[in-house]
Amino acid sequence: MEPGAGSFPAGAQELQRELDRVADRLRVLGPRLAGRGDDAGLATVRRTLQELADLGAAAEDRVRRDVPVLGAHALADQVLVLGHDVLAAGSVESVSRAHDLLVALRRSL
Image (cartoon, rainbow, N blue to C red; front, side):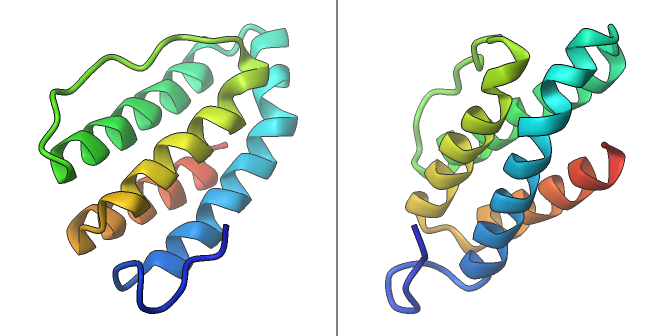
């Protein structure tokens, strides 16, 4: 999904690019983190997932819900779904914050 200039807030293309980069990295590193018992690394990813979910909920004025803990092989899909929820909400502030969260996550992996 490539955001169009008129349908998404400023920064949407940057967020989409970062989502793709993080998802690609998680497809490889997620199972490795689990395989070597890197609980701290998995916790960092899951904390970021929850923050993305909270951003999307706040931007859409929804009740916040806990992100389900799925296997490490599902982390990339979770980050994409939650990131696209933030994009769809259309909040410039949420998009900017989501981008910052993903950059920090990618650099920590």
